[in-house]
Image (cartoon, rainbow, N blue to C red; front, side, top):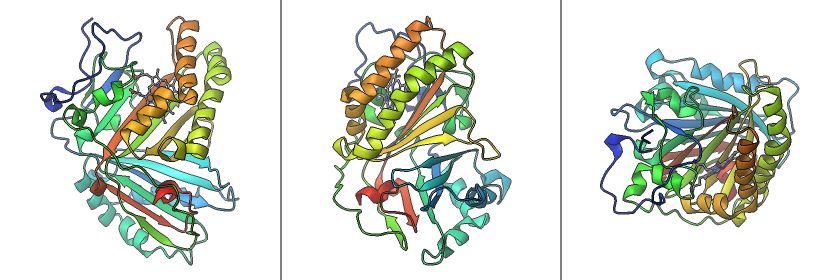
Length: 355
Ligand code: HEM
């Protein structure tokens, strides 16, 4: 079967930077990408969170419901195309309720923010008076600064809810450098970031509103796992062999990310619509100072090598009949394509860790 190019035809241009695809390469298993309509020029991914510094609140989901109440307001045409609730307890012991939401353009997001009342509410938050923290991390990548890849062509995740269609099997995956080869902008741009300074970010921020400036070519990855569709045999194999290794990788990035240019890493449980955590879905959401830092961790660090190698063994044990669904989306952002603001959050929250 002929393999498709990971970059949509309308975003392909003459490369000044060669792809790393090996000669005569055929990937060992299939992967697919979302194809967006040609008139989709930029998209929006917003990470909206509430942070409870004293651990899990007794009344769960109230803060998250506040956030989602806005997502359901405003004119229908400018509401988010998709939203996913999730939660995590972070390394400071704070419980975070988070919604990741997607819009098809910055104009849609801006209109929603104004007309739903969200912007008015957000600007009015007073960190001295709130009894917990709030954070807003909004990314506005131009479409050539975004890529998403899936192990399964039937179930869309994240921004792929805005797809026109899903590709056939693609060529550029399962070799180091394939992520960059799928990013349209990397055809002609080395997209270098700015090395992060992890010395800052130590002052007490719990009673402050802090807007963190955008960084040149900040790299965001959301990498998801869904084992809800697996057979009992595969589920056991996943939970016993892959999940623990994945947690070790995510813990490393969270606690020692400064060694590899990772500014923030949150390993999140996806919640159901009632706020329950029994979904059998997780994702890692990590912010790197440079695409090459993310590439370096995935290619060289033992924690991702164990994840990667573990998966190849897992797939071979199942003789390729894998029902685990994996996806990731990667954004490489210009400084003005980021809005990062923290109200009453602790100083290791998201981008506060490296200002
Ligand atoms: C690449 C497995 C989680 C970051 C890959 C590849 C596999 C893999 C098989 C090569 C596939 C391809 O390029 O298409 C897994 C599995 C995971 C997992 C089984 C979880 C169960 C993660 C997480 C992150 C991550 C949580 C980061 C937060 C990357 C990156 C690449 C990659 C950046 C691309 C490297 C490149 O193209 O140069 N992973 N991974 N992975 N993975 Fe993972």
